[in-house]
Length: 208
Image (cartoon, rainbow, N blue to C red; front, top):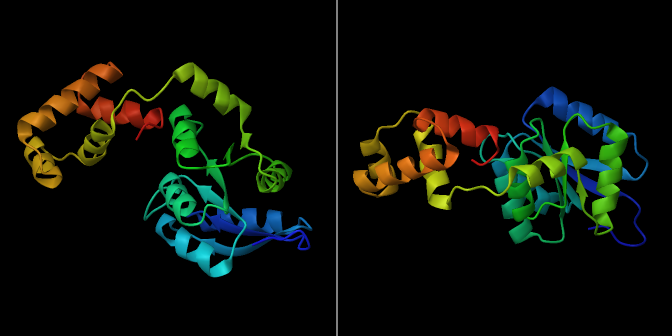
């Protein structure tokens, strides 16, 4: 980890698109006080890589295979709380911001932010401050809290691939009636007509 006598900030970069990952690494590498010491393409590789390379800051894309950047942030925060977490997103969905902050993120930025802004965010979180894209912060306040419970979100995620109620009940160890009730409640909360629309609406708001 970084010390007062060490001016190099050790960064982990997690991004599944290789061209984007390499471009971000190259841009950050131009900064005299930042070094990208490890790159990963999957969310489930983040924790092991952070441990192996003693990183100071982790830059985590939200959409990754293995697990999302938000899930990776939560695991990293629980295991290595001194590592600062910067979550990057292509989609400015208000629900993502709330989820990222709940997972322990120190910064939340859109991926197309200027490289200088990203580098400054890395320095800022290392000073113990938070950095949040102002437009996303305003949108999150306007949107309000996620109305879905943890169980409703779980069922909607499982229903996203078209599983039947019977298949959902088997996978989640619930009765079919309970599954129907949860889905009905989620549909009402989201003011949509069916489960497919509920999944789409929840995803668009970053609530899944």
